[in-house]
Each structure stands twice: as C-alpha cells, then as structure tokens.
Amino acid sequence: MSLSLAVSPAFPSALSPDLVVGRLRGAGCVFAEDEARLLFATARTDRELAAMVRRRVAGLPLEHVLGWAEFCGRRIAVDAGVFVPRPRTAFLARTAVNLAAALDGPVVLDLCCGSGAVAAVLGAEVADAEVHAADVESAAVRCARRNVAAVGGCVYEGDLYAPLPAGLRGRVDVLVANAPYVPTDDIALLPSEAREYEPLVALDGGADGLDVQRRVTAGAARWLAPGGSLLVETSERQADRTAAVMVRGGLAARVATDEELGATVVVGTYGTP
Image 1: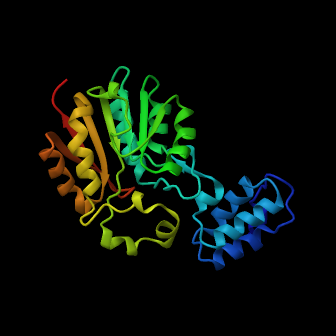
Image 2: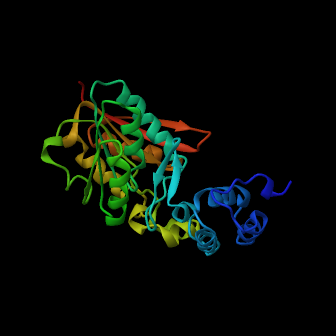
Image 3: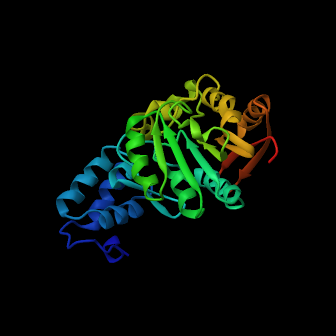
C-alpha cells in the first residue's frame, strides 16, 4: 500500500507522499513513513512542507523541523538549537510525578531543564504543584518559558541554583535534574543530530560524565525540604557512581530502572519530613 493512501495532509498538497518518503529514506531516515506523516500533518502549505523536507534531509533533527517533540503524551515546543527530550526521560518524569502527586501542594524544581519538558509534565499531571525550572542556555530558557508557562510555572536563566529566588531554599519537595552525563571523550560517538544541532553544554558531563551531577548534588540539601527527593537521570553503567555522589552529599540513594525505555534514575532523599 502506498503512503498516499494513509496520509491525510493538513492542506490540499500537490506533493506526493511517496516522493517525500523516498527523499527521507534516501537521506537515511529509518522511520521515513512515520516522519512523512508528521511532516504532512504539521506543514500548512506546500512551500512550508518542501522547506521542512529539505531541512530534515540536510540532517536537522525531526523535532527541530517540526518545532515540537512528543513527550509523555504531550507536545513540547522544541526550538532549533535546543536539546530534544529523549523518550527514556519519560521515566524520570513519571517517577517525579509519582513522588509529587503523593504530597499536598508540592514544590517541584527542574534543573538543567532544556525545553522544560519534565517541568511541563509535572505541572500538567500534579494539579496543585508549584513548578519552577532553570537552565543556563538562553535558547533553552526561551523555549522552556513557553512550555512551562502553559502549566503556570516559572523558568529562570542561569547556572544551576544561582538564578533561583531565595524563597525556594528549603522548600523543594521534588528536585529533578536531567544534567548532562555523557563523558567528554564519548561525545564524538553520539549521533550527528545531537553533536551538530544540540548545545554541547546539554551533552558534555565532563571526564567521567558526572561533573554537573556532582554540582547539583552538592547544592541539593540547601534547597530540598525535609524528606524531599533529588532525581537524576543517568546511565546504567554510571548509576552506582551517581548514587555514591548522592550519599556523599548527605542523601539516602536508590537506583530505579525501566528496562523497556532503557532508562536509569537515581533517587536521593534528604533527611526526614
């Protein structure tokens, strides 16, 4: 069956869906049919569709071409040059939602927030949550403000805790940090879409991948409420070291995994409520 029988363009298009699929497949897009459906559904004119196909064929991440990424069932705005939320990070978001939803009026904070995807999910799924997020990268902050404002949250620009209002100290119930954890020497092994189109600051975690995690953990106790939790996404091979960093920072650590998503999250708890 040709794709033209399955695609329902958002406008009367003169472009052949099968031709678009062929161009995408020729550029190495493994899921060319699925991508074509998204492009046809998102573009508003043939000119816009043709431009989107050209950008995708040139190697731009699909999410940057579309202007959004699907994350936890939500469309998250993702501008060019902004880190694209990964499917595995849904486990980090869901784990944080479960912790926050068990509390009354929880204060949640998303550090290294990128597009603000995790903060947006927390705000949408925990009705009474007070949502805050921060990132050091200006383009990410501009994008996150659109996503997080939709759930009534605030986004700050600056390095980790530096831009946060003093009134948050000791009040954060759930602190989420999808800090970069790729070792510097492994950056060259990442897919070209990440290396060429996403900011290095969102990828490079230093010599062993834990540099930013150490800084997040070192400051966590000053911002967490008694009994509050720090959640950090990491890799399976780094999980024990991430947990050890949390223990040295005064947190009781446990490792949680989701085999289906290939996701690992280390949860550290501060003191007792």
